[in-house]
Image (cartoon, rainbow, N blue to C red; front, side):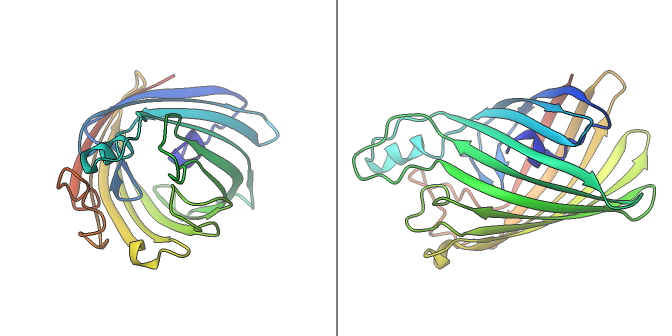
Length: 240
């Protein structure tokens, strides 16, 4: 989930970044840390032309959690890189196109389909009013998706709305649909409702409720935890 996927959109050229402590790392409605905390950091450079590139990282456990089933996987880190272009179509409409690579360095047993994933994406955001923003983004896998066998061509549709309440407060609503080629039983929809508060010193707080309609049996890990079930996550971030 590189910076480009987190909604960072610099108004001018330069470097931006953030450090985040989250009570759970939830990506597309699925916990990447078995419900445990995550420390995350990212940085992005954007040029006046609209071209940008960035990198982002977080601790994860969803791969090493296979150890509970007797499968020896050694991985504790997600490292992402992205590059793309942002532009505008008039005053209130902007677009974002790019490519993103999710890397999971580690040791994997023979025959294990590595989870490293490449996606291309295109998004559109409409500033419906000064307070309300509506967006949609489609991501298309150009490799197997997160280790699913023969899953290249999978797609994820993300639709969202943000509403600025004033005083740094923002309401966020999201809905998503994950399609997985050749693994249809694992497909699901996810949704999120959240609120965030931005402070003048660069800190921000976020609180979100997430859930999915994923098959619980398929998304219950070796520790008996449904990683795609309903969850509440709290985050504290510092931008720079």
